[in-house]
Length: 300
Image (cartoon, rainbow, N blue to C red):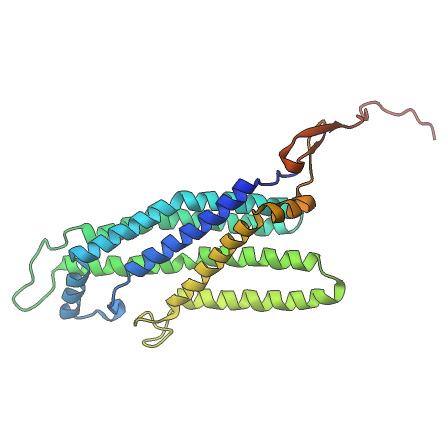
């Protein structure tokens, strides 16, 4: 059975939800940024300074707001993937593109589940737990609790960095689906151009996510330290998803929706006939049934 074409409401809801969710994640990431080089925190003095900075009531309030934004985005993210996947199945039903649909859908769900569940739990543990169960010694040695707090913060950062694997799978798979659509609808000579663009685009995306995952230098852009580093490349991933949301809002408009539906959603088949979906009406056209259960008595 062919997949059902999504309604205008589903497309519009998917687009708006994707925009709201990604803006919420960007805001949550922005307000919890701290001006501290965690990977260079090696002395007792720097550990104490780090603890004093993130244990303030002001920063704790920012973390609580950030967690609230992440939790609020959860239903929007699920609504977004529903419409995106449904629309993709209609366009690429029984084609090679179904593999890409499987990849971006599953990676998206895993990304959402990990970030929404584990991210806020780590953030609240770091800032809300009372790590001052011991005092600073007379020689300036930081308590063990301060070091545990620092390790948890580094663990959280690495956790989100590893999430770039899931984000990369979603982004590259969805973008590849777009290029695959252009490829199958292009003439022979232009397919080579599409293949070149596909290869270059996927390679550039892979390099960007690898830079986020493996920040290797001691200083500069490729270092995890400093105000501006390779982690800022995450922003273009959010921007890409926001553009997807804008696209879905655009095609959910009445004129564009009808034009797309004429191509992909004219008919769907069931066991008894053809069902028309034009203008939201359901009208069934019964087809002649051929009995194939009887064996023909043909003699050669």
